[in-house]
Structures are given as structure tokens and as C-alpha cells.
Length: 321
Ligand code: FES
Image (cartoon, rainbow, N blue to C red):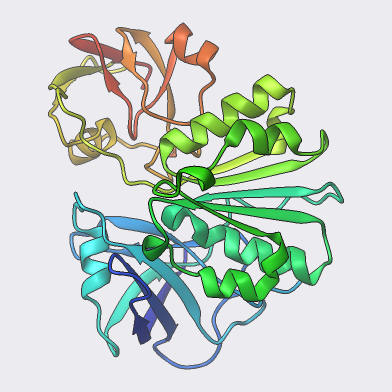
């Protein structure tokens, strides 16, 4: 995959926790195009990378071709492992390395109405979608939820795209908090639903849409939350079935991080539990599922897991690797 060298042209702080960054090509000229929902992966100083959606309030139908700049929105995570802290520390003129744009969350090619649901900084990929849908005169509604209004970024931009389509929901405004059952219950039966936000919101949207009878391919989601260490997380062992090697996964590290450090070759992408690329067959042991991609039935079967985020309830897992 090609790499981009990007120079920070401008930074802004629309809220206390959120910073926006405008990035241009270090060498000048235009940048590779992308479609609404796309992201780039920014390389961090420790060599790992983080996914950030590209925000374009002027997205046109089709793709954003040869843009002059990329715009990102980055929330400073309270338990940042370094990604958001690094991004918040960038100054104008700094240069970073990033992947080419990639899109795992594209708008479906359909005339069906669209329901966009954003939680917090999960708003970023949906902004470009709203702008593109508006430009195409495609029917859509945008619901944006957060803890309180001062914590919500990009409200002015979304209002400018189409104030009439935007509904803001805040936890500290009891009459105005988001009611997913009502929203999804009132959505047209052929609607496509796009949700981006924390794990609980995605799970609630998926369950509600499923109960309402929406087909799986009408519910699109992208997780916007770094994997969290949970209270009570313990170390567990992973056995690689092909070699018999056994490794210990401590709290705060993923199976992927441990196996990669030991030289095991793995396929993965999002590292958040929403793309399914790292899905691995479990031959023995009980996973502790922390992804948003498996259905309740798939979780209960316990025969596959996403090794980027999920852990173990048993002392050892034997994986088909
Ligand atoms: S890498 Fe995407 S679900 Fe694990």
C-alpha cells in the first residue's frame, strides 16, 4: 500500500476535546481522491497506526477527486494509548505519514432513503455522506448524539449542509436524548442505516434494526472507539494449532499485538472489531467477544472470534492459525 507524506496546514479546536487537522501533500500538489466514508491510517511514532475518517463538507456526488487537503477530526481519548495524544500534539508545519485513503464504509448504490446516526466523534465519516447525499438530492435524515452540546463538533457545518435534516440529541437534555427504537421504528422499511460511534450505540442500532426486520446489508456501521481495557481483564494463553506454540496475552495487549511481536503472520485491518478481517476459528476455549460484527448467535456459538479486540473467558484459547 502506498504511503503519503502529509504536512499539517492548519489546526483548530472546535471543542475542548476535539481538534481538527487540515493536511496537505508535503511535496505540494493534489492528494489522492476518495469517496464519502473513507479514512486514512496515520502512522504513530511507535510504528502503529490509527484510523481517521476524511471529512468533506463539500462532498459532491461520486468521489472527492484530487483534493487539495484532507481534513480530520480527532477526539482526545481519556485513556489514549498515544494515538489521539500524538494527533493533538501536532503543530502547523509538522509532517506525518499516512496510508492512501481506503473505504470500508461507503454509501450503498441505491435510491433508498438513508438514516445517518452519529455518536460523538463518530460524526466524521457521516459528514461527507450527508454532504454527498445533499448534493445528489437523495433523501436522508441525520441524527447526531453526544453527552452535551459543547462536546459536539461540526454542528455548524452540518447545519450548513441541511439544517432541516439535522437532529441533535444530548444526554443532558432529557427531552432530547436519542431514542433509537423510535428513530429506527419510523424509518422507511427499505432505508439504509449508517451508524458510527461507540460500541454500545452500534450494538443497539444493529439489534433494533434486526428486530424491526431490516436486512443485514441495510445496516452499515463503523466503530469509533479505541479498544478499551476493561476492569477485571486478566492474562490468558493462546495456542497456535499449527505449531503448538503458546503465548500469554496480558491485560492491555491484544492477541494480534502479542502474536505479531512473536513473528506470527496475521491478516487484520481496523483493529477495533468492526471489519471482520482478523476473524479466526476457535478450536478450543471460550472467547470473550468484544467486537461489533458478530451476531448474538455467532457469539454464542463461540467458534470464531475477532482477535484484534476479543479476549478469553477460559484460561487458554486454541486458535486455528
Ligand atoms: S481487524 Fe477488523 S475486526 Fe479485527
